[in-house]
Length: 197
Image 1: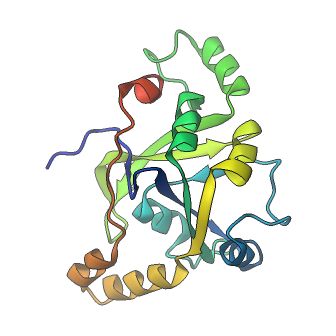
Image 2: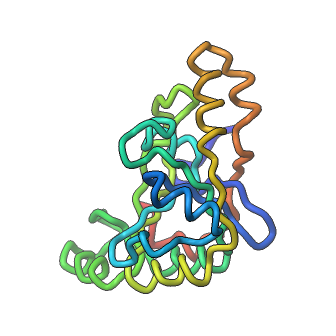
């Protein structure tokens, strides 16, 4: 089935969506244990969440990159996720989406969330011909994410390592069976209209 050039693919339930982040163990392990981000987690900086498991694997090197050894699956409310989309701005200027560069810069400065569309990845972490959402949260969005939207946090580092081991020996069928079941997310046109660059 042909994928849209820009689309959100994610594991989601009726009221929640799963996003991924990777942290050093001193931040990731307490978060998974307590089900919330602890005091070591920085609220004053932008945090990027990714609905695509394989894009997260590309970014963190299957949980092997320094400072990204603990991969977290963060279950957040769909209501919160969609709030972030509605209040987001594209992270780069796109002619036709923004009236002009100055308007985009003003929007970006005010927006509590920003969106990047990066090439989706396959099991070998090669680029696919369609893009995956990254959602950056700052200010009000970070506070809402940590305090209101987060429903559960789990450590999926062992899963990342297991899938990577299968990919390494060429057993892509077994690796694929272990992947989280991601499907097109029904965000609708309204929250995404200003984000399709």
